[in-house]
Length: 326
Image 1 (spheres, rainbow, N blue to C red):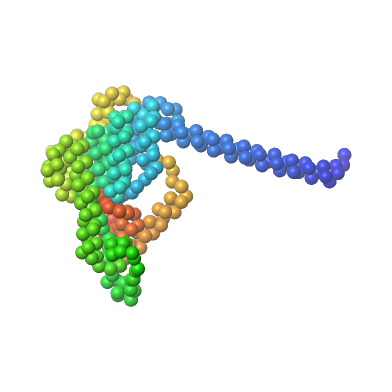
Image 2: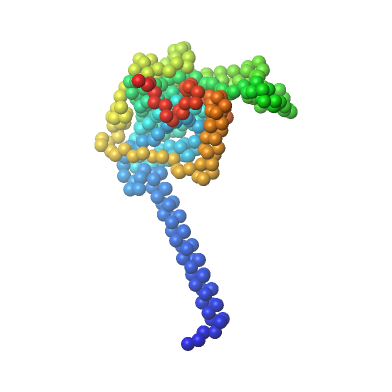
């Protein structure tokens, strides 16, 4: 039977429409499934069974909204009975340590929470550990380094050498100070010193409050020193020496059922835009390293604002640092 051209055209249009709606239905189903999986992951796993949650604070600390969102989500999960915070970090941005500390305090109000420092937990990372109700550390791990700093390079002589002159027009003398393109003025140094002292006093107050120390003793310990886990225990900066199992045992002593599985919880996956930002920061650090300015320009490429980080040698990657070396 011969079909007229109009009928053939109608059939083709109908097939195209059906194909479009089939694809749309598949896409919607995938999105819905992803949302369900994400929801269950946030609430403690695909099956929602009771467990101890493990969260990691590793590498150079920078503000991470996804991490804070995840920690706050754990507090709302009925499946999460206790939390162990695995810390391996030299610290980083002071605001990052503050954010994690605050999130862990909120979490501790809902769930027993213990911190475990296996290799390195210094400065902002130690600040974060203070948010837990119990701190366990390996004997030879490094911790402490209580303090605040801000660093920047002075490349003015380099610019003079290559014939580049820096100029600016600004509303007031302290605007955009300090700058790496000219020597720092005494006024700019005084301004930064006031900001650092303000945050340092707050950090010392956290140590005194959370570790049950009087302020004079906390100030004595907050001289920037890094200490081993054994020394930290003697100084009352931590509660126990041991492995992660010691932290788990403490959770069980707080009412968490023995033998519960331990499940790792991680922030939601990075977006394509955040990957590009990370690549840009890595490129900046690479250029800084090539110029021999890795320590100073690291602040531009990775850390903004005040820092609470244990000093690393030039060019050293904090994610590869392994604490005391033999």
